[in-house]
Figure 1 (cartoon, rainbow, N blue to C red):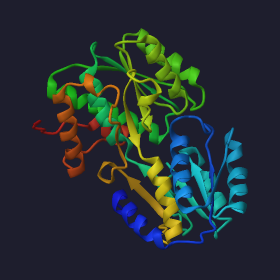
Figure 2 (cartoon, helix red, strand yellow):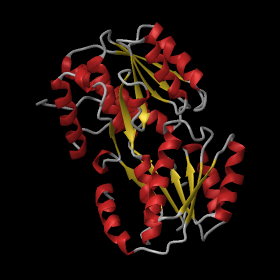
Figure 3 (cartoon, rainbow, N blue to C red):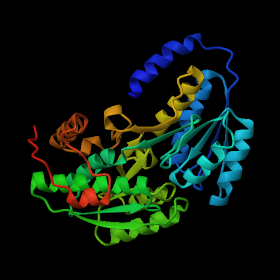
Figure 4 (cartoon, rainbow, N blue to C red):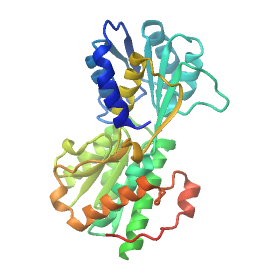
Length: 341
């Protein structure tokens, strides 16, 4: 399903939709609202859909994993559409959804378990590695010292796909331009504490890195703070949503996945009667992932690098450049024959 086409159809059809009495509730993961990333982005799409449709939307914040099942159950008793946000909520989502067959459930970054059968759950995952490839290529092009960093949260599949793409982008730039770029890797092992992200990023900057990409939820706020603290010549790269605004000039770019579009689309699908259960995968072909417009830093990037990024984006859309999405694929990844413009 292509996102743009769906939204155009939705805008047309919704002129005839009236009298809706739906209620939407989102259950966050432990990061909660205020992460300026994953949870906030999902909630943004829900609120936009709710405002457009004139329906109620509420959020329940989870503070620990033990909250997931009671929070989802509580939401299902009160709402018509319930969102479970985050890979760590997978088990809770499918346990609770089976108990409320008349409620629509939407999982973000969740894959249905093997053999699952049901018609009230739709899940959305993303080809994070495709957007991360672009920011990795850019980071390799822009580093002045040949050393860049990566700060992950918990090494769950979505976080790791960001890393795989980032490293593949670095590798392609190295191959095409004959430049050697090394990478530092670290994990905060949670998604909540900005201080952990800041400390890890500062450590990587102290080791010599000048650009650090984070995929760490609210911990990433600290990564951006670290880049701002180090000042000119040091950059963070944001994640999930456009985080460039958080420290203009210190965030080189952001690897975006359109969680807001996924949540917006899911709410509209229920309102329109077009809800499709099962797994939905959004990638660069669907404009479900990509990179920010670099409002504050674009002037720093050489024009030839921008052209190369546009070219590589089209190569991914055409399927001629396939980005690894597992560690095994990354280990076996060989740079294809690419003729840059």
